[in-house]
Image (cartoon, rainbow, N blue to C red):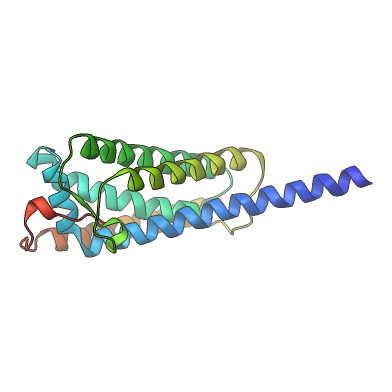
Amino acid sequence: MKRRVEKGVISAIMTYLLSGCQIVLAAILLIAAIGKVRHTQQLVQALRVSAISQFFVSPIATIIIILEAELVLGLVLGSQRMLPFIFGGTFLLLGAFTGWLISVYRRQLNVECGCFGASRAKVGKGSIMRNAVLMGISSLGFVLSLQIPGILPALSLWAFVVSAVLTGAGVLILSNRHMLKPANQDVSTSRFA
């Protein structure tokens, strides 16, 4: 009897940890995506400063915003079978972004980390460490999602696909609208959300 109670408690803790990983990552990615849509020009300028070919800057900025929005949708509404893939995708996106941050930091580029549209801090050890923590949360969510079901409600596959397509289209329209605005900032002091 005592063993069943302990197992139930552990299972409940793991379920709430999984849900916590989903909610924390979804909230952070949502804030980041909104910040990038609101300040797309700053994201584009930050990418330009980091020596990415002009040809790829706008597509990369758009893809980043769409991926963040889609991952939010997946973290909140994805089915149990989809969650490991969503956490894996979140880890990969954060890993790519962390690699970019490390590259900017090592080359001592003057890029402000307007992360989530609020901060004017320069890319540095703090922003790299923050992303490492988020990657750890993604890893924990991945491992937990392989073992236990989450408690957040999931959409049917078709409802999820329709929601994902509509979200992607909306983000694409919004980000492209902002990218077409003329830049008002000096490239050397760009901010990205």
